[in-house]
Image (cartoon, rainbow, N blue to C red; front, side):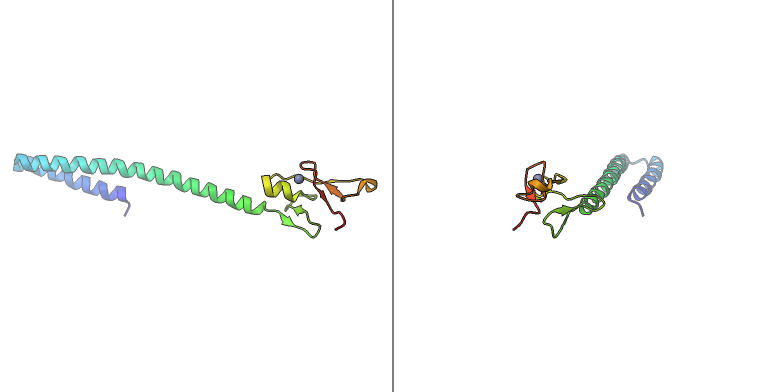
Length: 133
Ligand SMILES: [Zn+2]
């Protein structure tokens, strides 16, 4: 059973006891009953707050799980050309820029006459790719 419902049940029982106490008329009994009733009311309030906090936390966990899944999906693939490729995106990407800063920098093709150091160049860090090894 839900904790809120359990506390409510206890509160209801304590209310009935209060009614009974009016007939009994013992002062100490009445005082103890009043203490019990207020403790239960506090517990109800507290568990209501906990319930809200739990819901907020669950929402946060869900959002973090989604972020994680998204991050996993956007991980690069290291190709035979020594560059990165990303799912669903055209072109070749710089490995250095991603590994160091998680920056997706698309490599630019170098004109054939200027391919001394490689076929592609990173506009972010000027690294060359596709050169002779
Ligand atoms: Zn780069």
